[in-house]
Image (cartoon, rainbow, N blue to C red; front, top):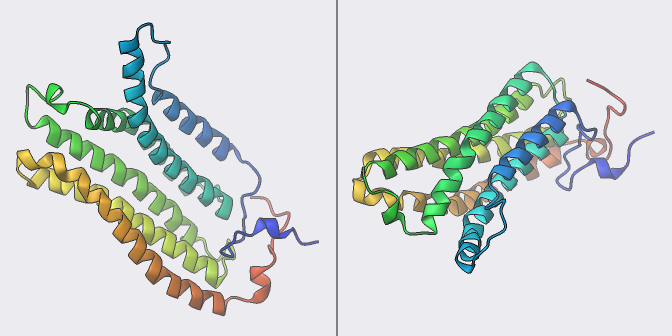
Length: 247
């Protein structure tokens, strides 16, 4: 008996990882711990000035939370779609989780000073801001390049996973999307290294170009996805062919 339509996403991708694995559980613990480190304060304020500082801390917390949630969601979708647990996936996932953990404080520090008076932070060495931008860009690039590696590893196993033409195309479009997103981290590092020191503070503005990349990538990918859907057998768009298979 075939499983229900609930095992297929709206874009036609059949879900192979519907059962929670130890990799999922361990990863969720790490993501949860990383978010715990972002909490603005564990102590109830005793004065209004302290309360005001807590409120100001909500802005960087919200931004950091949104970034980590997007990474967690990408991680969640990957394991739901492919359900792979090979050694390469485990090691790439470990590198991703390690990067997430060490990225917490630089990210929180960056957005904290972005919503406050940064002149009180960079007082002794003008090159500190350059270093911060490079650390931020490197962390961003590392996270998304790990996601690229996960999708490349899944694409490499496309025959074993019995990916349909549509699923192969969706895998590649997702992979190239993360290549572009991670590339902005490398661009941030390059600009922080090359620009004059008085212009380094404007480097994060390059991330607004992500909207341009997302729009262009989505427009181009849609054409390839439509062609792949036309080449996919109707039964591969309706049923999951390996019900009951365990890795």
